[in-house]
Image: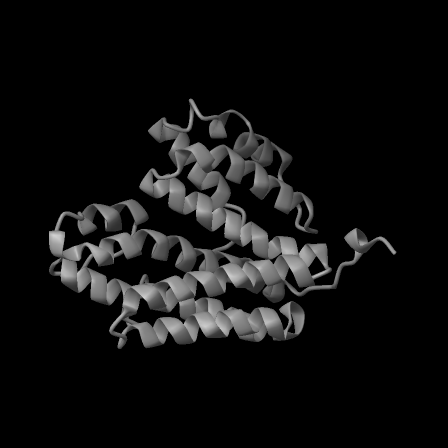
Length: 233
């Protein structure tokens, strides 16, 4: 049997949920990796949270760095908080439990539970690291246990789009942009999603070359291209 040809019929809602499960899980993962450094050194008061919010295009209603750290991590009423992103990943995973399997769902559940507990923990940094580990475990299970290449790669498309979006907006890991662009294109090629070959060629062509992605206009065009594949949830 050629397992690469196994695909499960999916509704548009399921495709959307798989994609956004990948995006929200990666949003928590990437954000926590940056946020942990800020949270650990907030007493130094040298982090410009206003610029950070502007770069990510999220609402800045914070009074100071301490307020930013607390609300950005834990405020469930703040739509751009890490807690809200984790909750959205969990909601999508619950809806997809029959598609992604109980083991993958369990890692998302453990990540959400740990993030909730971290608000009241004496060692929140250790809890944040556990959340990262659980999400990494989730991606490992997705790659290891889901035979259906369409399901697996739709999640990885969401993962890749979110990671590129984060890197480009914050100007970080620019040496990895080209690799992430190519990995995203590969994930798209293993889905049943209709791909615009021109857009893929732009994403994997000159725009993601190391010398060109430094340019602000190219960054913005690349962001528009990768974010334009799916309708926002």
